[in-house]
Length: 236
Image (cartoon, rainbow, N blue to C red):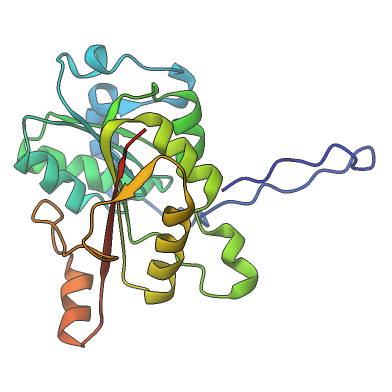
């Protein structure tokens, strides 16, 4: 999340933006670079486009699912392939991950997916219409383990309110993490957030069928590690 700059700074001084991620770009493979060159014109969205018309972007009216921080995009592409009746938007800051996502979309023949390579907070604020999304997904975000870094966790009140504004009434915010302390943090923040209700009977929900089990998560399960899913619905 970004922190607002304080107005009483000495002249010439600036506060560095606090991000919910660290950008480790790395190099694209030849395949990723080719996918970016070939498929970005039809599947890529730019922050500079400003507020988008979803029906125009996808060429149809359909429920919209938005995923924040899709990594290498495997799960996102598989979800788009499994739910062709929905439109999917992915946001990721890492170029190689975006390239890998487009490569896999080509492999599976997915056409109901669009992607941003940009900061999710800015995309939500500047590009996504209010009350337009049916589901927002945030899977395995950086938990920022150290207490002094907790302010970098993306699930904070300002971000939650931004998500709520973009969801339709009845739309859901689906989070997942394999870090128990972060799951508890998410649960606490969502309980206190206005306009949401927990869909779980108690605190957490079983992993829904539409969220693919990642290799990392499956390995963790074999080692006895847990994963926690939270689904909160916008009720006002």
